[in-house]
Each structure stands twice: as C-alpha cells, then as structure tokens.
Length: 78
Image 1 (spheres, rainbow, N blue to C red):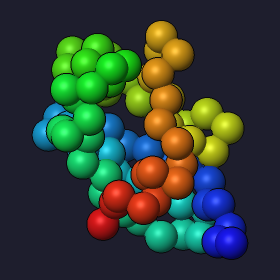
Image 2 (image 1 turned 45 degrees about the vertical axis):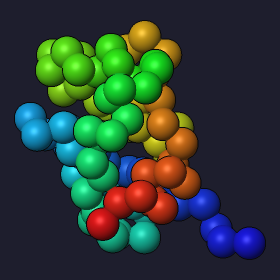
Image 3 (image 1 turned 90 degrees about the vertical axis):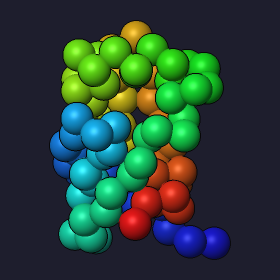
Image 4 (image 1 turned 90 degrees about the horizontal axis):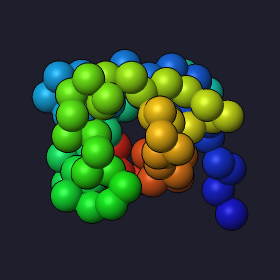
C-alpha cells in the first residue's frame, strides 16, 4: 500500500486549479473544473469561496465543510 501524502500548501488559482505542495516537496496542479458540477463542489463556482481554500489536516478544505481527499488530489494532479 502506498503511503498517503499530506498537502502542506495550497494556492487556489482563478482558473479553477489548485497549486499544491505535498509533504514530499513535490509541487502539483489539480484541476477542479470537472468537480464543480458535482455536490458539494458546486458551491465553489463562487470564486470568492473557491479562493478561500486552505490546508486542514493534510488536505484542502473550504468554509462550509467542503474538502477533498488527499489521495484524490495526488492521484488526479499533474
């Protein structure tokens, strides 16, 4: 089983992507656009809310109890 890597920094971008830094010092980009049509992520179409992304307990979270699993962030980022 692969070790789960924590996110240690997130930079939300205006193009609906997240610039992520993982604990292994690898920087990756995660495209949120495909998820913005699915609940609970539809709320993040509001740019003001999307840009409030922060790291909480090793993953990315937003106000309103919206978060995304760190393994999804790793597996689906480039």
